[in-house]
Every structure is written in C-alpha cells, then in structure tokens.
Length: 249
Image (tube, rainbow, N blue to C red):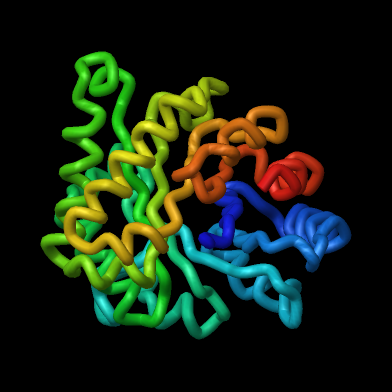
C-alpha cells in the first residue's frame, strides 16, 4: 500500500505573515488519523521558519531546488546538506519551471537527483511534456527520456528512496488539468517503465500528479490506480484549498 503524498509547492510566493497564517491554518485542519503524508515546499528563505513552525508535527518539509555541488563558489546555489540541516526531507528536482526558465537538461536533473540523495534527501523527480509535444504524440517519448536519464545516472535502486511527479507543462498554472484518464495513462506508463527494471520498486514508487489540482477535481484523480497524490501549486497557498485536496486523498 502506497501512502498518498500531498506536496504544496509555494514557488516564489510568501511573506512572514503569510507563512504563519498558512501553516497555522494547515495545522488546525490536520487529521492525524488520516494515512496521508503532507509536505510543504516553501522558498528557501522561509525553510528555517517553516521548520520551526512544524516542529513536533506530522508535517514534512522540502526544498524547491538543490545544487549538484556540495559547497564552494556557487553564488545563489543551495546544497542538499543545507536543506537537510534545517529539517528538509524532500527536494524537487527537474520541475518544469527549472527546465524551461533555467534550461536544466535531463542530465543536469539526473545529477541533482544524485546530489539530493547524497545529502540524505528524497528527490521528487518532476517529468512532463509541453502542449506541443502532447499534440504531436510525443508524451511517452519525452517522459520516458526524462525518467531514463535518471535511471542511467543513479541506477534503478535509487527509486526506492524517491518520488516521481508527472506534471504536464500545459496544465501548470493554466487552469487546465489532464483528465483522470489522461493522467492515469501517463502514470501507468511511468510505472511500467520502472517495472521493466525492477517490479518491486515500481510497485512501491509513489507517482504524484501536478497540474492545476483543486479540491473539486482531486477525488477523481486520486481514485486512479497509479496516482498516489499531488504536487500542488496555486492551491497550496491557502489552507482551505490545500486541505480540501488533502481530504480528497
């Protein structure tokens, strides 16, 4: 049985008052009897603050990005050890905005995956296709190459301590959402790709969906066999909308 994961990626949003209000609202609505893992992924400037606010609670903490380097003259970069030191257990690698806005290649993403695990973090590997690629029938090719690059660099065993997130680029922040059938088809494809290397790891691997998930569409998405939760963007910025998705899981 795979424990559902609901991860809130705040992206470049936040302020001290907003963080206090949001975390307080989430904790007030948390039901510890639910077998759902809840993860907050704030900007790096608020990691320490969130860490202190969720101490001794079931909430988990993650980073939005990680450097391939452990330390050194890399201005603006954040090492995995720095995230771990402030209580992070997870970190995003290969988010579509990093790939598109910062030009991160499949190879660089794979290197970040390895660096994250080297620092004791669980990478959340983000994969997904653009609208043009989907319309061109390239979804499986694109996603398959993104996953294969990490298998080649890290080995299949590395996926026993990782999460995969399918986020169709055309559905991120657009209000568009892949239908449950569309999302399930890609999740099943990813799990089958992993299973060809190791069926046991594939069966245990959590694959979450990201792309305009909201409280009203979450139940249908999460009811699918291979969708193990969500990577939530805009809806994670208010406790009410985020916890509606949490309850759906």
